[in-house]
Amino acid sequence: MAEVNMEQLLNCALCPNMCRCECPVLQVTGREAVAPAGKARISALVNEGKLAWDEVMLEAASNCLACRGCTIHCPFPELNLCDELLYSRMPAGEKGVSLSRVEPYLNNLRKYSSPYGQKTGSVIASGRAGEKAGGEEVLFFNGCTSLANHPASIEAAKSVLEKAGISYRMIEEDCCGYPALTWGDESLARQLAEENRRKFTESGATLLVTNCPECWLTFTDRYPDLGQELPLKIMDGPSFFLDLIKEGRLSPAENSSAGTDEPGLKTISYHDPCIWARTAEKVSEPREILRTIPGLEIEEAQPSGALTRCCGGGSMFQLAFPETAAAISSRRLQEFPAETVLVTACPFCREGLLAEDRSVWELVELLDRFFK
Ligand code: SF4
Ligand code: SF4
Image (tube, rainbow, N blue to C red; front, side, top):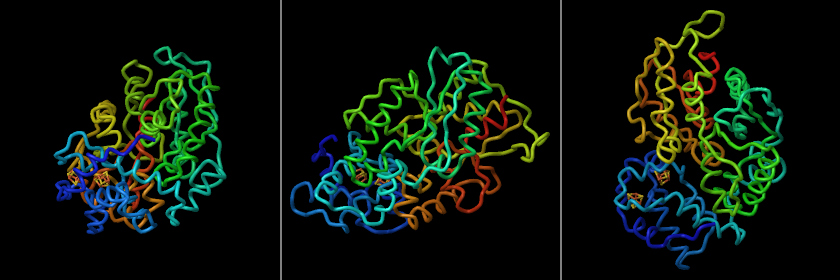
């Protein structure tokens, strides 16, 4: 993994939390130890050898959603605090210090290549007879959260790809490895990265499309850190789907309840997943898709777009810190107009926003329902 940038970490450690209003973890816990600068102080002191990792320190330094909300008001444009915290935590695992709360999920990963345990379904599918999208052989990657908790999203993705008539495949997926990294097991993350690289290479695909933003970030940013450059291009789901619409492969169908159990959509609010909005800068793409649906209005959450707030699902928080995740989700839900249907483009966000039984669609499900 990359080395810790001590200069940047110390900048943050000495800052009075200029970003305090944007860090969801600080907002809901009120704990200075888990504030951005608090986490940076612990990490800096450990890196300087003045503190040693123990589970209490590690728990505090792991209390980061990697949402990059802190970048909004940060005076240090070069600082990526969530990455510095990640790099700082890596030596803890090497010294045998780990978070007991995530051990069951790490054991699942070791045994089943999924933090959720034994996989119950298969995602293998292909539409090889179709045309190539942009001349590419597409490998569509759903991610372990959809596989474990929301197979309807996978069925929707298959249906959309079939409707678009393109050549695609889905393979038996293993976790991308990000949970192992964020929970400090670098060697397990490396194994998963190697296995994924092997499977992707064997698939013969030239374009990897990810529905899950955590997977996208892991494949684009973390794999090179782990020495695993992937042998294919990587594309985010929202851009890929928008291209299918622009190429005329998908077109909006009637926005009504005719022939279905679902009502038509009148007003929606799009929740921007942090990684798509702030790291991949995909703010306009999902809205362009939504604007093609006849009669659909968008009422924005406040804040939205690049200023979005995390739903509590970043960095597998729903597994590692469920109570904090639920409090963050509840706070985020208050930022949406009261009567709108929520749409998002991330399996973790969907789970986070479902917390109070609001109607939530994943973008891919909406594409399946309202496009032909
Ligand atoms: S992330 Fe930036 S604004 Fe926030 S505490 Fe660190 S240096 Fe200050
Ligand atoms: S990345 Fe998000 S959770 Fe982590 S310190 Fe920054 S604002 Fe807080």
